[in-house]
Amino acid sequence: MADEKSKAPPAAAAPPAPKKTGTIIGIVVSAVLSTGGAFGGAKLGIASAAGHKEPEHEAAHTIPTVRAPGVTVPLEPFLVTTSDATGKQRAIKLTLALELRAQEKDEAIKPFVPRMRDSALSYLRALPYEEATNNQHVEKMREELLERFTKLGALSIEQILITDFVTQ
Image (cartoon, helix red, strand yellow):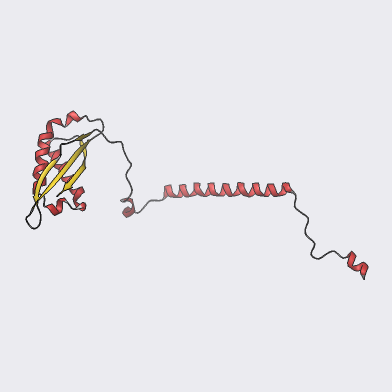
């Protein structure tokens, strides 16, 4: 029996150690396949996204492309008094800058500055204090002033910037 035990193969014998070249090839092949899969998946995602159309409610929230601003013309500060809900007079200091359309020069609006100041002061004096200081009203204020300035003939204005706003 002693001979039989020595001739039988060991049950828990370790498999032969793999060759180093086989291990390196395995690592390289799996790295190449992983990279190819990631690249192909990204390409497939881009292709499907290009064909994908967003619903209209989501498309309205996209950020517009940023463009270089035109010439910006600052106006002298406006100082107006308005009444609050209790009838108390409140002071507002407002400074505007006019951003012109591309290729326009500031000389295009210089003749209109006195008229624009008059129009802006008339509008701001009539504005209730609570409305003037409401952050949700700022865009409406810009639109109203732009519309007024355009009606005066200052057609080269792209947008109105509020560069200073102080209330008391």
